[in-house]
Image 1 (spheres, helix red, strand yellow):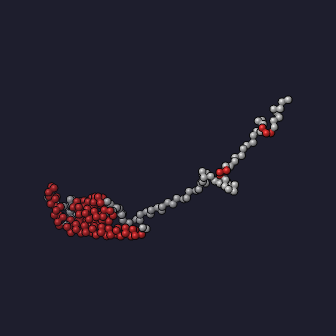
Image 2 (cartoon, rainbow, N blue to C red):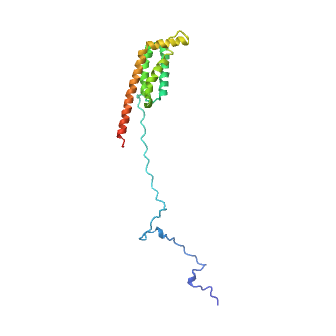
Image 3 (spheres, rainbow, N blue to C red):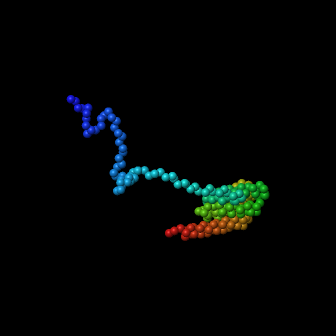
Length: 197
């Protein structure tokens, strides 16, 4: 008598019957003392929505009628002053018959602009480049007999006769530079006093 078909239940289910699906068992390391499941340290944190990024306010558009406020380096201020004075000298030579008085009057606003537009680190260059630019601008204005020697003699004579405009423009540039330097030092001191030590 064959008994291999009548197996007892201790040997497990038969192969012809489907096995029940296994339920996952939570690990004991992830449970707290009360049996509650504790989130593992390796489990990823829930995703949070990123905080909205604050964008800086847009810079206001320049108001019409306001003067430009560039910041020139020492070399830039020298080039600006020399080029403008040369062009003004050529203009005076063409329109006013090489009038040195008109040239001297036009020299004063150029000195003011050079002293205002030079940046804070190069303030002391403005009173130096202004007289050089005055001499450069005299090239088209100076009356010369002809040739390099005549032009040089005309420039020397113009510098001697128009020294008042030269000194006045240099003095104006120097005063503006001194005022700007005092304001810059005062601003730095107040900023240093406000910062925590």
